[in-house]
Amino acid sequence: MIAEKSINLDTLHKVLFDNEKLELSEECIRKVEESFDFLQSFSSDKIIYGINTGFGPMAQYRIEDQSLIDLQYNIIRSHSTGAGKPLPELYVKAAMIARLYTFLQGKSGVHLELVSLLCEFINRGIYPFIPEHGSVGASGDLVQLAHIALTLIGEGEVFYQGKLCNAATVLQENGLKPFSMRIREGLSVTNGTSVMTGIGIVNLIYAKKLLRWSVAASVMMNEIAASYDDFMAQALNEAKHHKGQQEIAAMMREWVAGSKCVLQRENELYNQVHKEKIFEHKVQPYYSLRCVPQILGPIYDELENAEEVLINEINSACDNPIVDPDTQNIYHGGNFHGDYISFEMDKLKIAVTKLTMLCERQINYLFHDRINGILPPFVNLGVLGLNYGLQASQFTATSTTAECQTLSNPMYVHSIPNNNDNQDIVSMGTNSALLAKTVIENSYQVMAIQFMGMAQAIDCLKIQDRLSPKSRQVYEEIRSFFPVFTNDTPKYKEIEMMIDYLKKEEI
Image 1 (cartoon, helix red, strand yellow):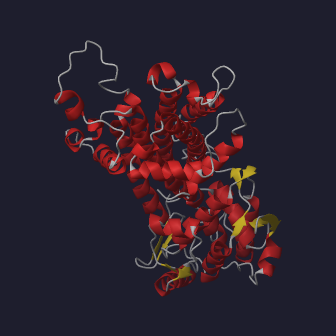
Image 2 (cartoon, helix red, strand yellow; image 1 turned 45 degrees about the horizontal axis):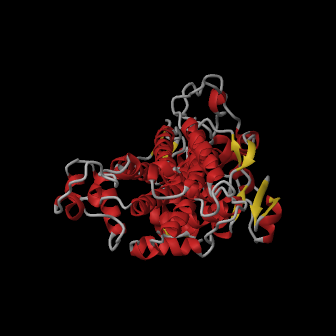
Image 3 (cartoon, helix red, strand yellow; image 1 turned 90 degrees about the horizontal axis):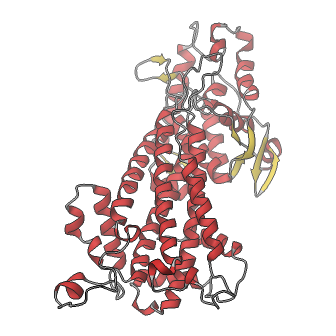
């Protein structure tokens, strides 16, 4: 796949999940070389931050010519100070892609050798060891990016073919050489929002899939409940002028097409004479079933906005200073500041938490016999009292949802000044992205339990043949690895299998 100056979410998905290889376009190569050549000529006899000055609050100190290369190595080594568990490989890959596309803007002044080596790491599955903790998100992800840079100079550690290895050894095995420092490569590779952006991209991809599954689950829940279908109606949802609500309702109508489970209000209540005083079947279902377009609609809108922000960020030059051959100038500023990503990740995790809350309430409807009135407690297909069905699985779903609610408190407003108050207001963008990552992982856990419960409910009611074709397909796919059960058995492995299905299956 040719790497052009910009990338979209579909292409990112192919590179991240389908292991499509990236090849630098001739135009990108030209832009990178032009930026480097301009910096090389322009920087002579000028004071430019991070080239012949110290970094951060040390910028007031001029660096002598004989120490300029050491300066670039020093920022990499001194900032490789992360702590905590390693960032998973998928998120590291996304961070490297984000860094690559910053360089491809042609405004970083780095040598092509660095860009080419970074591309080789992505294509060959060489993933730098990056501890999760260390970034305050202004000057970007200095610490985490330093860990990437450390491996690009042949130091530190990488995950390669499933093992943690010495970076120098892996480079040698692949016939690659550490990049040679020229002018400002050390600063440029460590300076910017690429780690938070990479994590954010993966978060977005997984969150979009969660939303699609939530639509599917909500339709299947209404099929199980034999709900009236007019809550999905086009006329009803167009009466409220929100794109997300209308899109969710349309997705539900497409999913439910062909179902014999849902009821039409016209046939059941409008075109028949009813003399009963109390209706056994609910005239309107509970909000967790009926208000799905209104609940998932804002989440749809937020994911659309998050995509715009993240794609804008990944296709931006996010380091400092900006080397601009077009205007023949070098600009000092704060493009490394991560507020856009931080704010968006807070909004994303709030959205996913609300989705998880909807999922948890739908689980409660399924498991609560006095509420649904049609299923045994906890969709227990065994002997009541002797067997327990999915009773304990609800504990997991409830507890995990509660954690999402706590984690959804904003990170964006928790700036703490540091760096001798040079960084006196920061974004905490990587923390925000990591918290969103946890919320999304939690949501998959809760949703896995919901789909297990729905499969049991469908078997209990024997409505397999009445489901919509889409619901029937999902039911059959789930039953291929999660068979109907009556006896009590541990469920933790089945939950993991269900999570894997939800993440990998295209919907």
